[in-house]
Length: 425
Ligand SMILES: *Cc1c(COP(=O)(O)O)cnc(C)c1O
Image (cartoon, rainbow, N blue to C red; front, side):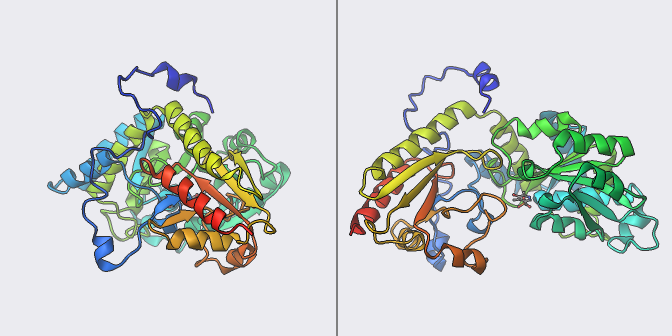
């Protein structure tokens, strides 16, 4: 983590923050006052697992919620709003252009649609049936970069061609090649790095895209890949940025984004009508991004570390327990506490532990043990039985603190200690 830039902009606030996290909701009851969840019988919980879509991602900042509430009182022209917000965001992210989409996945479909159709409305209407239209129809990516979210590209009618080496890449390029796609979180899994991938795109004049959906923090990733020269960059709004969970950003070349918008609402006759973002989300995304960029990330990091330490200290001396703090190299770069234990001292599986936390009051969701953050990070026990099966006997659990609200780390620490001590043999 580079903190120089952040430190430079640090203003000395007279507030004694102590161990209070920056994501503190003190003074704001937005998330707590009405409890319709309770009323209709839907469990809410303390999120010690991370930003997972099936757990509703992240909590929007109070400023974002306020923006949404206020925006709801006014009509506006949707194109005018997207134009203006797009311009403001483009400047913040060092891109020629930007537009708010209904998530990173949406940005992937729309961006590729823009490349395929240009400003030709007839072509926009022809998607996803590419045959006989003269449109290109293939996206190339590295084999290790071809994961579930690339399905977004199939929605345009394109197919995905995978390669492993630079020679294979150059070989695979042909008249039908629409785009070269890179998955940032898998950067260390492929043989071809960012710069070489980009260079091939430039050489053959083929647009190059990158999926950085979950790759902030660090904040610098918001502009890094635009600066590097990627033609399209896809980012989620509802992960660490804590904008609306149903929003994301498409950033990049002006001509492509202009074309991409022809496949997006408010228009119909296109593949993207379902990717609707309302005015509340567009403004919410803008405010969330601004807030995220202006956050004191250094201080936020220190708070995460101190909360992780607090939880670690509560459990690490219990007989049979070992802990380690890890920071992933790529994707969701925040401190993780991995707790593992010797079953001859503690009679509990990881699954038992997660269920006990889940059934407690307050309910707590902990992270999966021993799972690589990629590509299985988003697999839940209920949606991916294969993953769940491998976890049954695991005596490990992962705790993150970046999605905790103020003071919740203490509850998590206390509860973990209690559950482990109760399970001592
Ligand atoms: C989360 C994620 C997506 C999808 O992003 P949404 O904003 O939920 O549409 C795409 N790619 C990667 C690598 C992701 O982690």
